[in-house]
Amino acid sequence: MEFLGIELAQFSAFMIAVVIIIIAPGPDMFFILSRSISGGRRLGFLTTLGILLGVMFHIFLAALGISSILMASSLTFQIVKYIGAVYLIYLGVKSFREKSFFDTNIEQVPVSGKSAFIQGAITNVFNPKVALFFLTFLPQFVNENTGNIFIQFVFLGFCFAFSGFIFDLILSFLASSIISYFAKSKIAMLLQQKISGAILVILGLFLALEKS
Image (cartoon, rainbow, N blue to C red; front, side, top):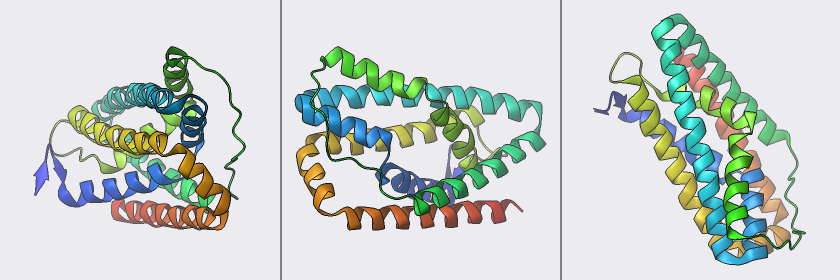
């Protein structure tokens, strides 16, 4: 069973990876929580919209770039996919080995809604790590032999962005409660980080071995 050339097994693996990546603590999570606590739900919502815009920007760039690579060389495309599998393993190992960096002492800084939106977008648009992530992550789940590559990229990218957007909204609405939980349950947060890292490593190894 497939949709737009993407097999159900591929899509299931993709969504598992998406969920793990989204819930793992990171800079965007901290940024949204800080804005939500300092300016309320409205500011958190606008920050989330800005981040969504930045994510979609990188997704379309990745879709255009990887599509061009595929048109130029199928071998190069396979190399990109291998690099992506290795990058997933790297992210998993990094997450597994890192100590929790989450700071619960959030500074209360007055920010306008417009500034929150622009900052959310800029922090993603001009972050090369975000570009690298999508250039290496999305190709793992694209089937170059069936369907339109660009459409597959955009579809998967939209699924990633929409899932992240929903999770970020929940974060912004529950900001105070989440900060309190993190402050009291750093061990639980660290355990979640370790589990997420281990699953990313396993997924990266699975994708690499599957291609070989």
